[in-house]
Amino acid sequence: MTIAVKTFARLAEAASALSTERGARFLAGGTLVMRAVNEAEPSIETLVRSTDPSFVGIAVTSGRVELGAGVTMAAILGERELAFLHPVARAVGGPAVREAATIGGNLFAPSPYGDFASALLALDATVTLAGGYGQRELSLEEFLGRRERGASLVSSIAFKRPANEVFRFTKVTRVHPKGLSVLAIAAQLPLANGRIAGPRIAYGAMGRMPLRAKAAERALEGRPLEDNAIAPALAVAADGTSPLDDAIASAWWRREILPIHLRRLLLGAGRS
Amino acid sequence: MKTSIQFRLNDEEVATFADSGSNLLDVLREGIGDLSVKGGCWQGTCGTCTVLVDGMPRLSCVTLAESCEGKSIETVAGLRQGAKLHPLQTAFMERFAAQCGYCTPGMLMAAKALLDREPNPTRENVVDAICGNICRCTGYEPIIAAVLDAARAAPRRS
Ligand SMILES: Cc1cc2nc3c(=O)[nH]c(=O)nc-3n(C[C@H](O)[C@H](O)[C@H](O)COP(=O)(O)OP(=O)(O)OC[C@H]3O[C@@H](n4cnc5c(N)ncnc54)[C@H](O)[C@@H]3O)c2cc1C
Ligand code: FES
Ligand code: FES
Image (cartoon, rainbow over all chains, first blue to last red):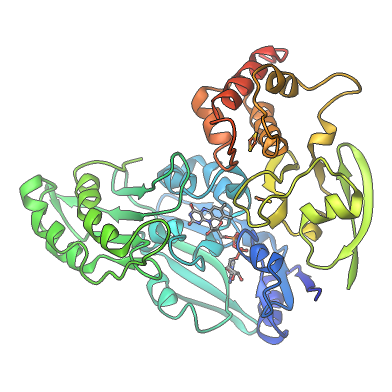
């Protein structure tokens, strides 16, 4: 069966087509969609694309970052103002994958993929959905919660730019320099008078999709980043997680090593 | 449904008709007849199908051919100039960087993408450039050595 490819100059038109065409699937970088097409996935009858310039736009001000959902990992790596995100973008595949893979596509990538999405969750990002009748903004957390329900088009992603040294990221793999996640941890760790104030920690590959480490966040509040002080957070690090058993690692192993890597991150690893 | 696709391939204009939704790898091999590009997995995993699209490395098996309309594509077939091999090809021969040769087209193009941008790469740069390309024969070391040799052999730009 051949597939219809429909390319739209405006995101709103692409969003309408996505909701009205039979068997429509949005194509961004295609690193996952084209796999499915090559395997003749029967649910895909139409590929919807957009050449809207806003889809690949990058706007960075002192306080805020706004990224078109079609921005690639390579484009992030080419933007000096986004240096804090370079370790995250570099963690996604090899150079040829990074040229194509988009940040929007990463929000839909099944576990153990989704490294960039975990970073965006730690950054408290919001997602803008394009529809035929206008746009709608919602938190990434809410978006991930309903990800599997509908075929909405993500047009852009925005977040507050973290202060220097506040954002950290680590990805644990078996193969170096490139491998799929055993797990990934992204964190914003703001300090007030040497103590953690309002931490935000997200895990990749610790569930079907990126998730917050809410118990660890609560246990860190008001504590200095020192070995004894972080022990209670490490004890609850795996609370609320439901990692997969897959070819990369067992769920048991992921839970076992999570506190070890969270400890390293809290004590200074993963700064960009 | 057939669709027409036109792009530059190794500095020549080419055009073909392909099934809509085809990947670039199949279009290059079956539509245009450039058999220098190899397919291994059609999953984006092995890297042997790596080509350059507007100078940047792309996995042709997971690239929608229609998205390459009007672009410039480079494959291994365009590397040598007449009888003269590209410095990467010479270095791969001299370092025994190809055994079964299956990964070689992708390795050469991933390495070319690096050297075109970074004529004086470090070993780490080379490892990163080929990290999406699987080789089951050489253990990678001869390939890394060949890319570093090729960088040294190429005329200096700076
Ligand atoms: C060899 C290889 C290695 C990889 N390594 C990693 C890795 O290390 N880490 C990682 O996280 N991922 C990895 N991936 C997975 C993938 O490349 C990335 O997750 C990438 O970010 C997906 O983006 P894409 O633009 O290619 O998505 P596509 O393939 O274009 O789309 C993926 C899904 O998302 C939907 N979609 C895409 N964009 C939008 C949008 N804007 N709005 C609505 N729906 C949308 C599509 O319809 C599709 O269902 C790898 C893939 C390959 C082939
Ligand atoms: S054939 Fe494209 S990556 Fe294997
Ligand atoms: S030479 Fe055989 S796979 Fe690399």
